[in-house]
Structures are given as C-alpha cells and as structure tokens.
Image (tube, rainbow, N blue to C red; front, side, top):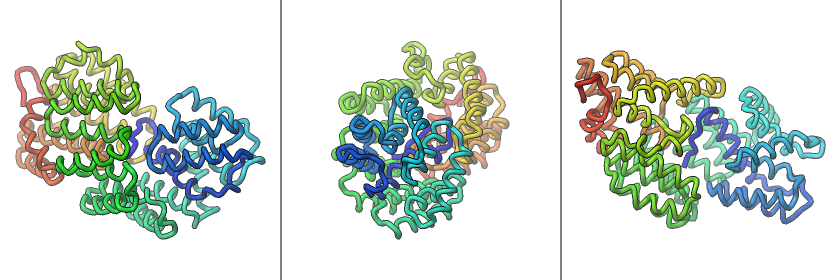
Length: 452
C-alpha cells in the first residue's frame, strides 16, 4: 500500500504520515513522551503500532483515546493531525500545538511538533530545514536514517535512498516497513524482480500483516499476473477484511482486464467492510470505469457522478477523457483549467515525482488528439512520461496508460515504427494489457468522423 496525495510533495507527506509514526514507534521509550497518564501512553503506543501496520482506522481510534485521557499529550496530537480525516479536527490539533510551551517538551517532541506544524502550514522549506537540523543532530538515529532515505527518494536520488534504507535495516531489523519502501523504490525504477524480492521478504518477516500482501499484489497486478495478484490481495483481506486499499486493487484487476462484470462483487464487500464515505467514493469512481469500458460515455452526467466526486483530483484523468468522448467539450475545457490551476498552486510543494503537472500534460495530449494534432499530443505524452514512475499500482497504471496514448499519437502521426517501440515497452511491463491496445485506441478521442 502506498498513499497517493495531490497538492503536496508525496514524499513530504509520507515523511510525516508514515515516518513519524513508524520511526517514533521504534523509540517507544517512555522518557521521550511528556504524559503522566499511563493509559494515555498505552493508547498512544497502540496507535503507533497500528500505523506501522497501515491500519489507519485503528490508529485514529487509539490516538483520539490518548488525547481524551491526556488533553496535554503533544505527541498524540501530532499523530491526530496526520491520521484524522476531519479538517476541523486537524486544525484544532494544530492550533493547540501552537499554544504549547516548547520548554515542557522533550527534544524529540519539540522536533515532531515543529515538523507537524510545517506540514499543517504546507511550508515545504520549513519542513526541510527542520528535518535537516534533526539529521545533523542525530545522524545515526534510525528515525534520522528513515528521514534521510525518504528525502533522497523525493529527490529521485534512487541509489542513495536504497543504501539508506538498507543501512536502516542493519541498525534496526525491526523496521520491516523499510522493506516495503525498498520494494516500491525498485518498482518505481522498473526493477520489478528486485521489487518482488523485497515485497516477499516483507511478507515473510511480517506474516500477520495485511499490507505486505497488498504491496506484492499491486506489483503483480501491474505486471499482468492477475491470478497471483488476486491470491495475495485475498490473503491480506483474510487477515484484515477492512484493509480497503486491497479492494481498490481488486477493482484495478478488472479494469486492466477490461471486464466491468467483476466490479459489483468487490463493491458489495467494500460496502460491508469500509466506511460509508469510502464506499460511496469508490462506487462513484467505478461508474467512470463502467462508462469507459462499456463505451457509455455520457453515463457520468446522466448519473451526476460529479456530485460525489466534486474535487478535481478526485475525478481523475478518466473524467476529462469521457467528457471529450461524450462531446462535452465545455466540461473537458473546464476540467483542464481546473487541473492547470491545481498544478500551479501545488508547484512549490511538488518535487520531481509526477503530481498535477504530469496530469496536465496528459490531459493536454488527449485534447490535442481530439483536435487532430497527434504530433503535438505525442510531445505532451512524452513529457508526462518523464514525470511518472512505476511507484505503485496507481502511478504505474497511469504511466502505462500514458504510454498507450503516446503510441496512439505516434501512430496517428504516421510514425508507426516509433509507435510499435512504445507499445513493446508497455508489453514488457504488462503483456496482457498490451493486448487491449486496439480497444484503447478505439476509446481515444479523435476529430469528428475518426476513431482509432
């Protein structure tokens, strides 16, 4: 499982959302935490353990309990900022931390508060400055190694990040999530065999956790090994039926297979095991998949899907494509403008990893195909490809889909050898999805009177 967020650098979010919890858990020394309540400390440590396993709902419950038992517990409030789905609650926790006298906190707590407030303020520069101060003060600290590794990943310094994660495992073998990150790091670079080795090791050392199965399942889906992927995802769900990321990945298999008939059974399980809000959102997203696969391009507007996917980032790339295919050019233009605004607003928080800029480039390419300018479209798709990596199933699917569109643009431009080369690159990653190229070509916008 890898969280995907838009609008702030993915690595920065991961540092706070994952490293804070997991790294601090590694230092569960009672002297590090300023609380006189033993039950509050126990709830806090249970929350950190839940986050280590990516069981966010459990973590949220434990952290709320810790704050309830000790309203002055700064570290627990830091964690609530990271896991709470409520913007009001996150704001209240941040405001309360601003009022804390830092002299009452330990050194680590002061650092965590500063880091969390930089995150809350969306101040990437202050975040980095704070992080580097901590690295300088504690260069051999396992948490510092994790932080350094993630900063290296954010800068696409792949080799350095890998060495730091491996060093972290030498210092503290209990940091099993480092295996998870090593797997995604290899996956991002297209080193799929190496990624599989890391994920299987992660699965071996954490046999009672759902996330190792989910991470390996993501990789197997991307590679077109769908039956193996289903086995892994179902194994994780047997351990934790509420591990909702795995249901999304099961839906991803059906999307790759081009078979909408597999959606309903998975959606029923999401209704049963996930929150109502999550279930509603996934159902809305799936209606976009159905519209695309069934070529019922006007379905999202007949069913008012925009009402449950109201934000630009929630609607994804498919919504724009469907608008063009449904000849709703005004909707497509509005969506493109919204994505461009989002990219502009987030640019100062965004590193080299994908984000809204790659989405804008892809959307522009699709629009140019619809306008009959495949050469210009190919340029956009090539540039987008530079920003997108195989970092997990979500990004990996976007990268493959973008390359499919690049092949279509090259083919329409008359450069069939280049188109075949790009399609061969897709086939090397997922040969089964490459077989769907003719269908994808037919579902790609084109000038009036032309399809494919």
